[in-house]
Length: 589
Image 1 (cartoon, rainbow, N blue to C red):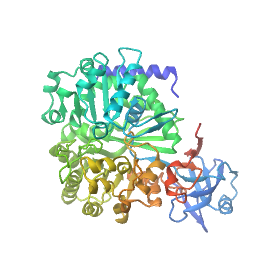
Image 2: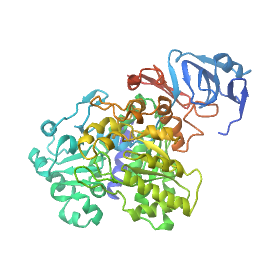
Image 3: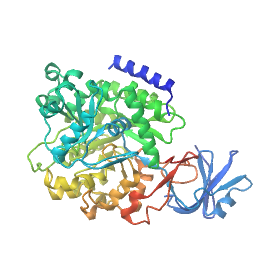
Image 4: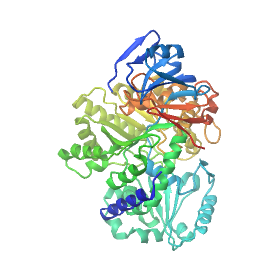
């Protein structure tokens, strides 16, 4: 929690922002693996089952922890024997529970997730949050009615109405005039379900300086992705209008409560490590996040990956790497930036249907590039030559083709081994592209919720049945032997690793329909995708992702085994709590 003194510090940071708009020795003893004991006390945890995801010792009944590290795994007699003369205690807190490696939220956005989840949620699906459920809006009339009702309950006439979750294919078109009819005096900001679009009413435009002159000053690409007459801004237009809204979206009081929500929510869902690839490059905003997430009692570590788009857009070629590396000093305590990693953006968001497709959308609209192609090519080349691991946001098959072409070109020009280029989101693709990902040595970070949330609707709107059903083709990826991780990209999906496993394994839509069963992931593969493979995708596999001697003692404690329960019940498994680097952390109900 953040006390008043910390909040005052945050307020100071905010106004500054406004003004500046283990190497371990491993020994083997029969079937038990242990590291050399040291002088710290040893605790041996027993459980009904411990799924280590260590290929040599996959299911055990005991794990020994010394300080923040695992030192042995095996049967209880084996682990006791491995302790030799060392003093130890046997802890049976988890004797009737299942321990798995600590869940990794491989790709999430704390500020976006927190602010969206603490706004007025009117979305395409139910959102079950602690203390409140926001039911889905099923039609245009229901959406507008809910928005009117939210506005009518607001007491302060100057307070901004911020609502997240609108989607045109579920809720129908939204015009500025319709928002003005709800209120001509109260600023209204509608944050699209994709989080890549804003809709503003006239009062919001006036409050935040969104003027005709401002619009005319935009780049041609940003203008092309803006509709000034209707107060609608998407992708590059969204990036343009965003800075004008930052002061409202990230007010200190809003941000503190939002981040505390994220902290509690992720912990309740078993997360021990999180990462945000490509967040806003802002030192004051990073300081705000550090104020909550960086505290020593934070229940998880959180890592950040630099947004290369912002940096290469501001600096000359020979300055880019040095400017990127300056971000390594921005972490604090339980937060840090990962060295040698960067995020780039290809095409637009799937929730906006702004992804670039090989075959046209069925309704004739066009996708969008989040980075102009020459800008993307330059940015990729600069970071590739600097030896960076590159995470690329890409959703459409034409967007993916561009990314793979760029990767192949750079591999031929400047060959690299183990580059682990990450294909992020992986919405629409084809089998040949999966084969090409394998050949080029790339890996996948997929959002398995896309077919669950969108397949039924997108069969009718934009994609058609074949492309909609086969979104996120994890079955093909797994068969090809490509390393893949799962992410929620919260708020794009609930930040619940068990729900992501459920989505990948079942592919059952919110309406109850099974889509593309051949693209279902295996349960073991999906569990690895939120643990071992997620760690690999972040180059953290030597520290986390499995329960092995020498690695950090990061565990998620469950009431049931996700590999043996009914597949449809995986998302409902209760999380008892976590162990973070040896610290036992039950979920407080």
